[in-house]
Amino acid sequence: MPTISVVLQTVNETVYTFPMKPNFTEPKIYTGGVDVRQWSKLSKTEQKKALKKPWYVYFSFRDPKTGKLKRQAGIKGGANRYTTKRDRLSFLKVLQAKLLFLLKEGFDPYQKNTELENKFKKRKVSTADNKPEAPQEFRATQTLSQTTVPETPTELIKKDHTETDKTPQKPNKEKESIEEPLISVAEAFELALKIKKSILNQNSYPKYRSRINRFQKWLDENDYDVSDIRKIDRKTVISYLNDVLQQTSPRNRNNTRAALSSLFSTLEENELIGENFILKINVLRSVPERNKTYTPHQLKEIDSYLKTNDPLLRLFVQFVSYNFLRPIEICRLKIGDVDIQDKKIYVRAKNKVVKIKIIPDIMINNIPDISDMNKEHYLFTPERIGGEWETDESNKRDYFSKRFKKVKDHFKLGKDYGLYSFRHSFITGLYREMAKTATSEEVKSRLMLITGHTSPQALEKYLRDIDAALPEDYSNLIKPKDNNDTP
Image (cartoon, rainbow, N blue to C red; front, side, top):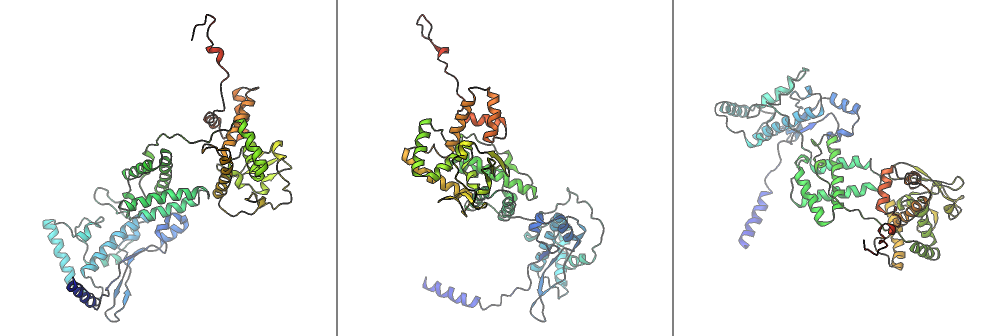
């Protein structure tokens, strides 16, 4: 071991004294002064402007006189006859690969390259006679030509000077194909997330991004090839969803599937993948978790406790109970959203920009005087009614949920109870009271205006889930006959 260490040290010191300056830079593609990775974000005018400019492959080579790398003339090779970004870029990708191959073979723009050209001519003759397999470096990029070896250096450069304005022939799919530019999983996901960020609200986007990031992390941890987004197939996604199912629940698995499907739809719309195959993956049956309703006795006890120990939380609960608002909707309310004089409240809901709800008299009498408060201040803050509270609305909702947990602990209520339980309880009570004097259809029609459900079907499903509608006593239907026979 000591001898090997000494030798390695000597080799290390010797190797780094060798001149390692490359004679050329890797060829790059000029795309009209725009970043083609952001092509979908450009306006139609910007795209047309970029396509009007010449696109070409360029590189630098070491000048033998100065010893410095010098930019060489760009090589178009006929690429600008193509009128779409995809076709033009695909053509230049192949040209770029061929040029890199020639440079590695020893091409020098400052010399005649006679020896190199003769070598390629011999390869062409040999190819015509024997059709040997093309060099490995070129096989991966051979798509536009039927030859098995690239052009000679002279032929490659001449193409730049013979380019015309002729309309290109439509490519024959049977004879040739255009290689699509590779877009990695990371690049594709980054683009899709940027688009989704401008669409989703500030509460939904972090959860959505978290699900996508977990999938990307899983791909890395399980050594999947992430060099090309098109290599992620249906089988890969199913494997991940099965993993999510085993570790969590059917509901979380379905939510993950929905998030990935939404992402891949965006990738399809931006032509980064052929189709969104996740739509064909089935949705598992899952039983939704819903808060239980409180009994009348529980409602009375909790209200009495809050009135003495936490009046601010009591008012929050009353907005849930009497106005049938969701906790996160209450957290969005500002002073200017509550019109005491007109008995209106303007709610920024999840499914539309603003919805208007009346404030019933029972609620009006509980709201303190807010007429002189700043209209831009939030109605509820941790300390008082009306004030600044700069945090995410989901954090606000979680704050009041945790604050209510102290009440649950006091009454020894389980996890099935929460702030949502008040909404369920009062809608149930309201439905049963209305049903005493009206038909089922009349009740649902009136109740929709109060609860804010968007359709009768949605309301009916909700009422079934919370068991709002119960049958009358049916004892008389199963009562034993007079002869004391049992049913």
